[in-house]
Amino acid sequence: MNDKAIHGVREYLLNRYEAQIRGHGLRLEDIQDDFDLLQEGIIDSLGIMELLSDIDSHFDVAIDFEALDTSQLTVIGPLATYIEDFLSSQRPQPR
Image (cartoon, rainbow, N blue to C red; front, side):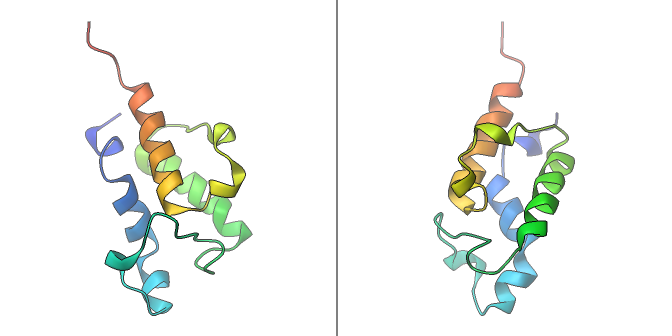
């Protein structure tokens, strides 16, 4: 796993959907952690599956999303935090 796995999860998510977010008249810098990609119409139910697959591919690790509350699966802040925590737990620990 490379270092990009630990840093930039929120930025990755926002950049991944930048065109759709801007298409809704929003600016990336104004997106708060409670922004829900599904509720705001940025993704649909199929988009959730694509998002999860893209995350696994981008960070080069199979992330176990079952532990994340499904109501937070499409919310920027909780999703980014969950991914960061998961990735941090996968890093080799110093001896």
